[in-house]
Length: 211
Image (tube, rainbow, N blue to C red; front, side):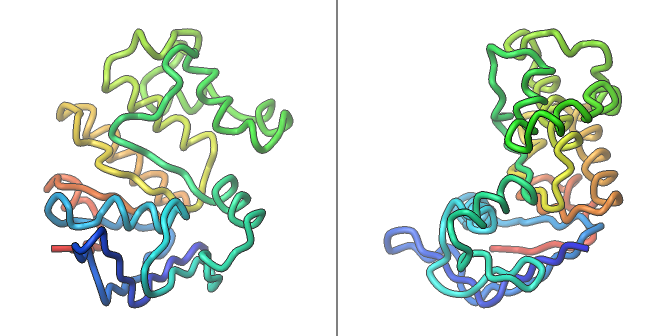
């Protein structure tokens, strides 16, 4: 069971205070929505949890470990083994095939992990069965987000940080992505979603507001 605790967190950008005194916890098995107007620090907070940025004050604990205090090798393993990202811009290798993008998600874990992965099963879950040889640049935006979701399914991270994952999608694709994130949470992941979407907020069991 993965537990995330954010304790008295503060972050500024230049002279603008994004958030301060922010404390909350997220448990595995639940969806947590991170809300607030543009510029309130939602993406920045995700970056701090993902060790891409540092808080000005406060601590972030994962399973009782202060992640910012980890040495570089431990941080690398944390990103490799524990974290999964899902972005509005998909973050795929466009000139690679769908299957190659899924392989990249596991490449740091070695050839054995790639060989054991059920890529076709992941693609079936997101409605892309049999399409692994297609190149990403030929896909629609909704299809590319489905590939990004399949990438999470094969990696099986225990923490998922999703930044506006439905922001550029139509209603059908948004519902599919949200339903699959719910399923991933039920399988044991802690999922944090930065969002403006009421549909996403309504599906989450916890809402953290940075207003």
